[in-house]
Image: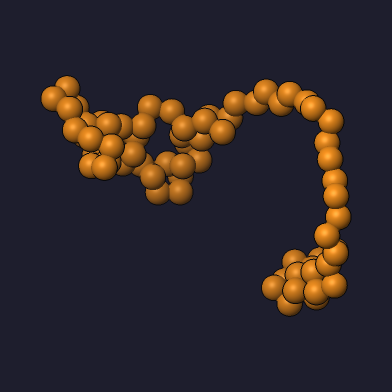
Length: 73
């Protein structure tokens, strides 16, 4: 399997790919994962900071500009 984890390995694996039909039965998946800390760890600190957040395309308001309180997956 490790040999497919390169660009060339992937290209070789899909070179002769064929279309198939697949289906899944109806199901419900309920999972909420809070992504605040992982996103902050990747450099998105300002988005969660009411003083530093800068989302001008979302609008402006007198009490304060838009800021992210939670990011959920």
